Image 1 (cartoon, helix red, strand yellow):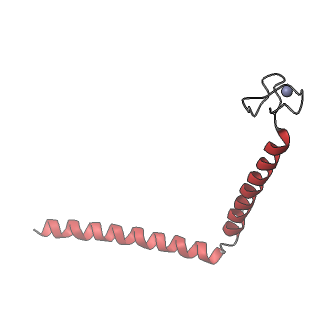
Image 2 (cartoon, protein in one colour):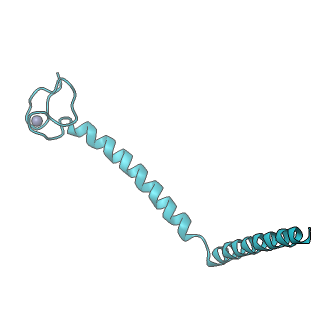
Image 3 (cartoon, rainbow, N blue to C red):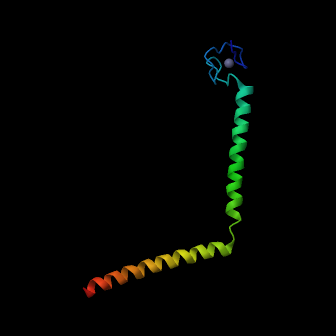
Length: 88
Ligand SMILES: [Zn+2]
């Protein structure tokens, strides 16, 4: 029979939180799982931050210029289409 690590009351249903004292009934195992999961998340977040910071100024300027060029070519295409329609 499982017992609460805090108050030693039986925890036969395997609750994370003790029904008697309200603390985590099986703290040692639960804490280990949380630490592993948290460190995984922390690593992922740190990777994102590193990737973001390695984008150089030059690259960001190029991507902005590309977007402007795309927008401009869209506008010109629309104008050209309208001109063609007017011609008909
Ligand atoms: Zn308890």
